[in-house]
Image (tube, rainbow, N blue to C red; front, side, top):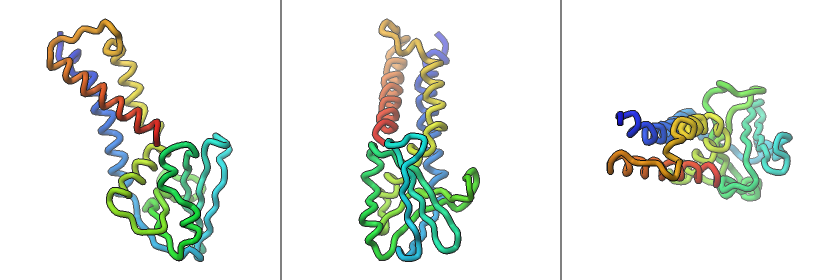
Length: 187
């Protein structure tokens, strides 16, 4: 068999992860953390019209007509990172927003996260994963869908591996795809 048969499934699984990591890196690059006094901003939580009870949008606006917004899913792990009661009672809050307005509608800047304290590196990573999965999911699943379409043989019960390298690479690719799907499901 050809090298294409051996390497296409692991390669497409790797491309899925590479695109996810690229989106994370771009979001980290564009994020600017701002510290503001709680009394200088207006927090607004409203249920989204599209999903209704399954998601909500958080809007933050200040006196300089800057609007920051982000949608959150109600029943996902990403809500563990958002404690609105603590934020509403804090003296100052920290918000990470987009440095540019590229692709945003209504002159709203993207809101990556909002907290009542400075975040450590691990918390920033969890917040960025949450933002990336919740708000850029359509871009992330395109390579995953292509993997499922182009590699249908690998999902059959009677699929025959060419050699031990092919089996090992396919096992790694199954694990990568499974972890990615699990990450999307819980966030």
